[in-house]
Image (cartoon, rainbow, N blue to C red):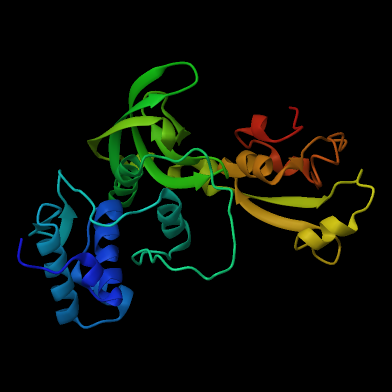
Length: 292
């Protein structure tokens, strides 16, 4: 390595670009000059310097794919920046937060109850690369009944507020299923995903259902709940979700899904008014009070 200054001595804007280069390569499987140019609206020459600097700082992390003209993470990739899982999942789900983390405070006391179930960041990165590059992966997986080795083709991520899941085609069961990422023990590449394993073939992932949520009819006073949520003028929230995640969402939001709103109004302040929308939806065992 050349006689470079420590990362802390590099100007903040350039550190942000270096962090982006690292995240893009690690989680998406490739980074190019064009990615850096488009993300930060800089000249090509500046992006070239950033990539060169990153490779000097971490010479074993990236290799040049001559055919595609992109840099890919090496087998021994070891990040030079520190990441929290919550920061990475914010970046993945909301598209921002890829700058280098600042040790800076607003001076406003603020706490967030984060999920206790945090996936291993290396496992999350491997799953993300498989999704981005449309690859199948062989995983070891701990279900509630057994430990197994299986090949899946992941194409999406979703969170139920407690855990992150990969939506994938499972070759063992020949079904589209959800896999809790914290329960994945190892990941190995298993070749290209097949055409029949893509998101377009997953009816439950492609289908959207509209949920009609209203204040729980058994509430003594509905005014506080009307303040809490963005109801329309008729006192209804219309929420569109993927059928594959509807059960998870209803549990996360604490919605009483019983047909006669018999769930406790103290526990469930919302009620699902149109239960018929859930016809054919998987994972309804997760929806509070829903009985087939």
